[in-house]
Every structure is written in structure tokens, then in C-alpha cells.
Image (cartoon, rainbow, N blue to C red):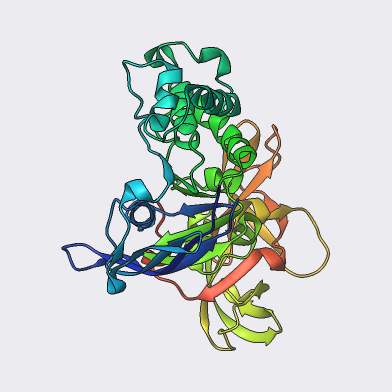
Length: 369
């Protein structure tokens, strides 16, 4: 039976003394898929391993279904085997000498079930992952994507309270990764499982997660539904890591509710969304996604003339480098034809709701994996 996961003020410090996980708190509701997203070394896998019991937290508490399974200050540390957790690793971790059926049945061997009950559960798990017709094949005869489905079926067959997935698609080739990525959410939802998923791939996170938690340097920066993470990033790092590659320096001139007027390079002014803490006079960095810049005349604010400095044709889209605000910014236009020549002048619109101003950032704020 799936259960709620609660992580409270989790902290993990290794011998180096620097926290790998630093005061992280979040809840995964029963039946929900939460994805921890971030660059290598941000603490996402360490967080997952603490939930699994493979790492011992330095401080904080972890609960599954209301049961405290880890609380160092209280001397509580439930062994991994007693947490009733399923786990899928980067490697397939299948037993090569067994058939598909034998691999999936293995976790049930010491659970006091009848043979008929085991067969039924294995059949249900294989049906979930679309491998029923492969049950009696040697597991080593399968493709990488099929072996990862076997690993997934094996982790679900005993109906764990919680499913943990540590970058399970990273060892697959690009085509298999896309195919299994699209299937994973369907499989987990059909099984009714609570899942915590770790990845550094932004697209993977958006496809799979009901909510995404973005981590950096051991801290959880934002936990929100995918559209909120992408359309209202909590800070400059979240904006950068999720694809906002244009950064414009400026200063707040005035504020009108959630939005403000920013003076950027060349004395040009634009309207941008402002976090609550930013007041007139504050130095800011404005983050803008290339795909949110529109070509052509538009109504309202943030209409500018720009020069096309370079173009990169990519078949179904073209990336243009534009001279604007005394800087080079990128704009993406979908279509199989390049419409704007290098050296030409173009009109562009930067929708105010897609321009996000944050306290002036450093190089670390813009680092992305």
C-alpha cells in the first residue's frame, strides 16, 4: 500500500565537513511522483539514499506513512530491509542467470506466499511493464530498456509503500530513454505508487513529476508543479538550470505590484516580474528564455528593435543571436525556414510575465550541469 513520505530538516555531512544535504524538508503525498532535479553533486541522490537507508542522516527526520524510520537525535534508524521500499538503480541490477519471471519473483521468495499468489503478483507486475510475453526468456536476451522494465517490475511486485528511482534511464541510449521516460509515469500511476525520482535531466523531470524539487549545494531551492518551476522560478539558479539562458543586467526604477520597470543597458527600459524583496534602486539580473522572445510587432510593453548578429539553423527551429540592451541575447523561432538574415533589423517582444528579475547574480547562480 503506497504511503506518504515526509522529510524534515534533513542534513547529511560527510567527512569533508561540508553538508551534502543541508536542512531539506518536503512531503510526497501518497500516490504522488516527486522528482528531485539538479546538477551533479547537488545532494539529490544523497537525499534519496537517506530515505532508502543506504546513508545515515546526520540530523533531521524521515517518515513513511507516519512511521519514523530515521531520526538520529532520537536514536531511530530502521534498517533498509524493514522500510518496505522498492528501488530502481542506474544499472539494471538484474540476475543474469535467471529468466524474466524468476527475476521479478525473487523478492517474493521469503514473504510467506503460496506459489499461486506469487505467480499472480508476478503476472500483474509484468503486465504493468508490458513484458508478459517475455516472462520465460533469459533476462540477458532483452534490450537495455526491457531489462530496466524488469528491474522496475521487480521493485513493484511486492507492493512497496514507496518507490525510489535513482536516474534509472541514464544508462539507456537516447531513443530507448525517450520511450521508457514516456512510459514510466503511466506505469507508476497505474500501480498507484508513491515515488521519489532523482534526475539531472530537466525534460525527464517535467514529463514524470507531479512536482519538481530543484536542488543546489545541498539545499532545496524550490518545490512546485512543473509549470510553476518553469514559468516562475524561485531564483536565478532555478531559472538558469531549467533553460533561461539570457541574462540582462539592470536596475529597478519603480515597482507596480508584482512587476517593475527595469533600466537595462543603453538606457532602455523594460517591464519584468519582481520577487517581493526587490525595491527601487536594486541591482538585478533579468532572466529570459529564448523560446519566450517573440518576433514581430506586438501589443503592450517590452517591444524593441534588435539586430540579428548570428543564426544557427537546427532543422525544425532556428536560434538567432540578437544585439539588444548592449548585450547578445538568444531568441528561438520554431519553423523549418530561417526568416531573418544576419545584419537585418527585427522587431521583438519580450512578454513581461516571461521576464524575471532577481537580485544581481554571481557566476555560481548561473552554473548549470
